[in-house]
Image (tube, rainbow, N blue to C red; front, top):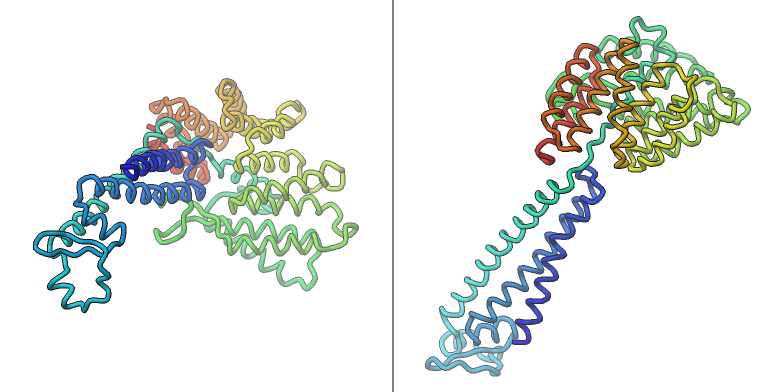
Length: 429
């Protein structure tokens, strides 16, 4: 009886732990990631232990004494004329004689089979209970959607090398082919200088963002992705940037901070946001110290805030973006871009009271500039806000508006984010 009481208490505790582990993973309100997967795996392991305890408790209560002594306590059990005995060292008796004289026959095997079936049934029910608990927790604490590609279009469009390409950056083979041709020409130089390396790094990054034309091409968010980052092509940019940074500081000139900033953008595209944040902090320090004039300090600040926001530090991202939104001398397009990201940082930080007003101000600025890409991004952020507040009808409407505007501008990064955001609907509503 003591075993039944103690094992029952241990079962209840282990069951509670297995249900609590998925909840711990959802407290950060982040999308399902590696940590959540580990917690679910641990929950299932604890559930296996719970099933073993529960099955043993049931067996102790309803199974015969001879089964418990033989299979659990490991005692030698034998039977003569329906009477069960324990203690004989059966191992010393020949196996054939064991089966004839000392075996417990079909009754023992029947209870063994019942024990195994009971364990499997209980294990299936317990694993299902963990998954059901995860669904309940997901309804209680839906993850806050993150939109990692809403900065890419603006950054790529601002590359100085694109001033030589008619119409600026847009997805497709035309810009990729042009970038490849320019890159090949520059590759023929035997000893490229800092400016050449910087140009080649931009051209390599332009080639790395490729249009998905076939179903078997890689995707990051869903099979409907319109564009993807080819990391193998993009690493060529890192080599050229490292050629700049490996020189003595006096020889790097104005390209030290710009090379770090472009390296930070590579890590953003590669979704290594923690690394991007570190590199962009160095770039911002260099540029703000007045040693760099190639890249706008506000663009670097915006990229760093984006990296901090994506790596989970939305509060710090908000503080970085305040340095832009409080500066009335910033050009209108950069200011609107900072405004929409500032609203995103507030949303991810849980301070959603001001988000809607800031997004409306950003939308007004984009309408004045007739910037449909910016308008699409604002509607995308409005959809994310509506989902967080449980207004799924409004979220669907804003997603549709974001998609329509992005199609008109061929802003396929925003279309990628439309596909990503739509995946949150089953989990949240």
